[in-house]
Image: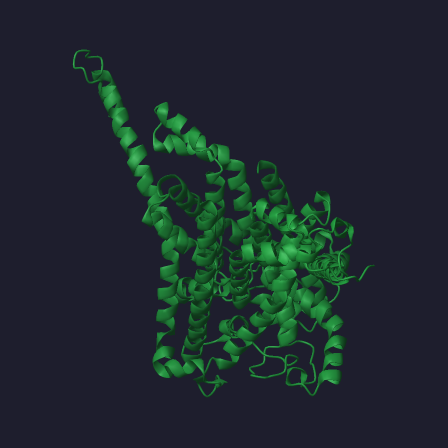
Length: 300
Length: 328
């Protein structure tokens, strides 16, 4: 490697042979060194994901049986009776279902206003700003809000309060992703629809929403997968129970809160059950995410 | 009513066709009415943030009246004595988020560069970016679980080594118990990395090719181009992404609550355990009784709300200013 310094340009102007000289040692060293550093740091960045997936499968899979998915949790320290997390799976599905019922109409209709009618207006951009800010509110603060609005007024921890908190987490995600989806529909299609005499309702639903539906669906699925994994809004709204969920007005178990409670438990069986819950949760969440991203990559 | 009108439409002479008339009325409802309905839902969605702010402030009000502004710098937190102060929790929140930001920005930029430059063929780059973004999809309670049972045991020897060799330095002056500030900071780094790297990558990709070509044509190497042209051109976007990441770190609850040790403490040592605002809310709220304890926890929530609001609004403004600039 040559270490000869590059002469000052004014001297070297005429010397064409300099063009063929290799880079100075310092510049080569800097280039190679930075490339190496960037690769090492990027390698560090993907290491945790692989470690998490590996550990979740390694520690979660041994206890995964049909009983685990369908039975109630065994009381701590008891042996010889079926141990499961069926109530947590049902509770999570119940609360996410109700949260979806509350948040999907609000999110999609709000996005329709922002994309179709409010674009460029002060109201439209103001509302969009507020919804973006809402998406950054920590989910634990959403939990405090749901506690005060529902748990405090009804005097009981309940699945309803959990669903309400999850719905508030979901609304901005659905609104912003639907907004992006609607923007992908060419304006010409809206104009053509109006020119044929369709009113705004018809144009919006028959032309715009129907052609953006795959992308809206994937955005909504991503919001649902986020809600399935949320813990902070549930720990003091839905709370937890080791029994089957009984309607929306009782404390309701969920996979995420079960993992939190059992991770800190002194019983090894409960720690193991937390890993199994994590396996179920990661499986659901990653399936939704990979599927959605493949669909999104195809449409863009 | 519909049948009435259509039967009367058999009268041919009037010029205005009643059937057409009713479809116009229907159109008006479907047209203007529909706009107002969607506007209503948009207002509901946007109004949530005001409703939330009002509700938690109202609930925290007695604590605000009791303690006033000194709540922020008071270090007491005693349930039996009914004395509450936020400083240890504000300290823990800021320090862990600061560590995360300090580490996640260089790593995030590295990932953004690797996935936007042509170091690697496209078929490696796309999955790489995808894998990093997938971390954001993992629920934080699972990252916390991994932190407790995998990361803390693996990282403990490193902490002990830091304490033994650099123990004279205040940052490493305490015997590491396992969970602690540094562990929480590292876990947060993992969690905010996807935010920073994916936005930075998009910004770097949108830097005009002509700028890069001009720099290369003048004889700059790839890394000289990156440092003197690409990164300065993308600077505001990267700053916006980092602030957004900071906002996420400040509000992150479960993973931090599981690995920070949950002790109320202000300490110079990064190896010590501590607590954060979200962590103390997760730990104490469900067991707190109506009264000053619950109201003080609510007030912590208000402080966290304001903190993240300021950070997020700053990020939104920076990124919006950037996208306006890009559109010109």
